[in-house]
Image 1 (tube, rainbow, N blue to C red):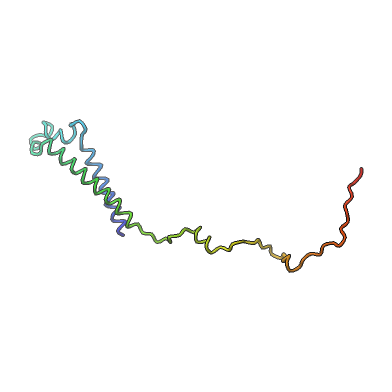
Image 2 (cartoon, one colour):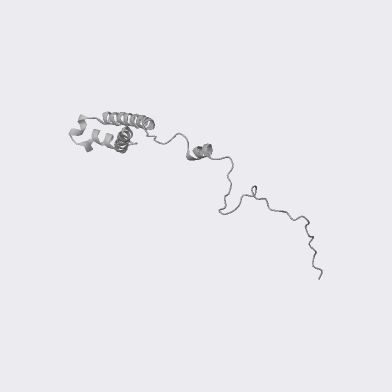
Length: 128
């Protein structure tokens, strides 16, 4: 539940951070430059270009700090219902040391040893 809330806040902060960064201008011609000049009209002079740039840069810093903090905090709230050991590790502990292949209907050779011929006959090669 906490993880979901943190992720929603992270998404909102990402959207706000994107908007604030796009409002800034690298050469002084964006929102900060337009509000201070004639493009802003009469109401644009209330908040000068320098104050707008300062506000946007401080907002960027605050949002970036919040973003990083929430991303780090999200790691502590990830639900981990899984065991700490992997499936391979679990099977390795409980598995028998040696596995034997069992063939249905086959007899155990240790119980019924086959009789070896007493006198083996040599095989003669064909002489053709």
